[in-house]
Amino acid sequence: MAKTGWTNIIEVLSGEKTGKNVKMRGWIYRTRSSGNIVFMILRDATGILQTTIKKGNLKDNEFEDAKKALIESSLELSGFVKKDERAPGGYELQVNTVNIMNFAEPFPIVKDQSPEFLLDQRHLWIRSQKLTSVFKIRSTVVGAIHKFFREKGYYEFDAPVLQPNQCEGGSTLFEVKYYNNKTYLSQSWQLYAEAAVFGLEKIYNMGPTFRAEKSKTSRHLSEFWMAEMEAAWVDLHDVSEIAKNEVKYILKEVLK
Image (cartoon, rainbow, N blue to C red; front, side, top):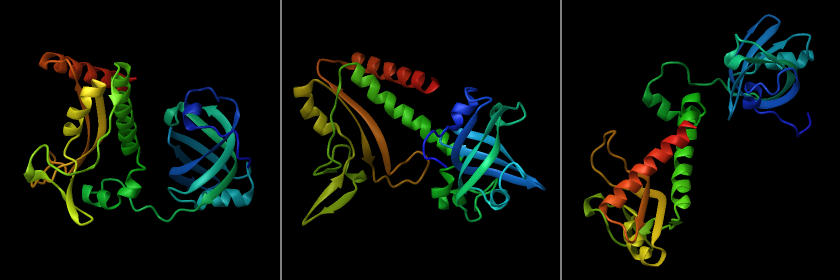
């Protein structure tokens, strides 16, 4: 197949490719075969799409490859887009060529497995529809934070991750050997911000934060990403209003 003119699943689900021949690529999300037909659900980063692969509509060796390909096999397809209310998303690809790029091994994740097992298979579980949705929302949240502050005239100001002193509390410091000295993983951007605000006036940061908290619960995190802001000429009421407006702005962006 040519390496240009690929169609994403979201383009098909939008209806703009109905009645057209398209070239697609992705991974097998679900698959089952029944005699001379293979029902395959294709996934890419934009969604999932039902495809039907019928013997006789493509080369015999391509049909056999499609029949034996397992979940997470990567492939290229071409075919005709048809509207079908029974299909996920309401559209289907009627396939006329199949090129299996890589035949996957049996996929270890099935329905209703424990959180512990899914964490052990995290590199595979992040391909799931649930987690890709989580990552897309997180990306939107982070983008909205940057957009909110930049639109209001704030400068992004980064601080070191390795810092020589504490700013939140000595009991939660991660100590790191730094050549012949010792230093600490950042608890906050705060001390650097308090110095920079006298030059830039309005600054913000989105960066990694580390807390060596002794408790192991869902309310305690050893590592997380924190958005912080600092500004000159503001009082407590101003800061409160900025925080409320930021949360509203983020929520609107996520809903969009």
